[in-house]
Image 1 (cartoon, one colour):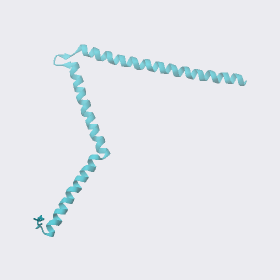
Image 2 (spheres, rainbow, N blue to C red):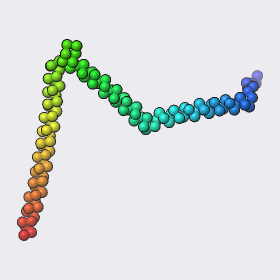
Image 3 (cartoon, helix red, strand yellow):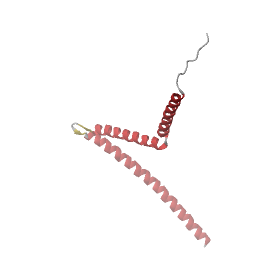
Image 4 (cartoon, helix red, strand yellow):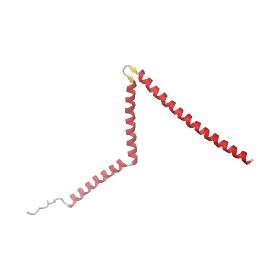
Length: 120
């Protein structure tokens, strides 16, 4: 019982056409893959996904402070308080770091003045 190979009854021209069709399919798939993994395409997809996410989150946040009855004052006060807290925190940090920079500048000026007095 020898295994018989199936006989290919295609003509040479049919085989060439089949090969050309297969080559065209592979070429199209490779082009599609290259377009899919191209950095610009990845960037564009990521931007689109981020926009969709931001839009969804914005709508969700908006629905928590405004409903069918109108603006929810309790939620607006909470959001306003949070914003005020963040602004206060940032101003405090800026004042602290600004004061630190101011002291460092004053120290450098005093050292320079002391040097110039010693040199005279």
